[in-house]
Image (cartoon, rainbow, N blue to C red; front, side, top):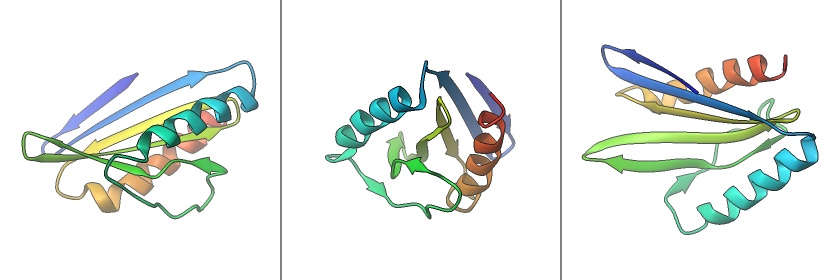
Length: 103
């Protein structure tokens, strides 16, 4: 897990490697079921093979967005807050996807 903090954003990323892509997808399926009762919005599928909707959380008035996806046998979570979070989340998620694909 890593976190990068800038003057107007906080970016968090975590990656969990599983024995197989099927196992990673099964875990993501459970996460998707858990999101049904929470505030989410869809993200462009783009290059993502299996991706959850973007989870929207309120932390004391600060909105935080979280995207969880599978790339190969990796389950990746990207969390972003800050004023440009909605436009930057897909950019950082794509960078994380490319890095995870090298695992």
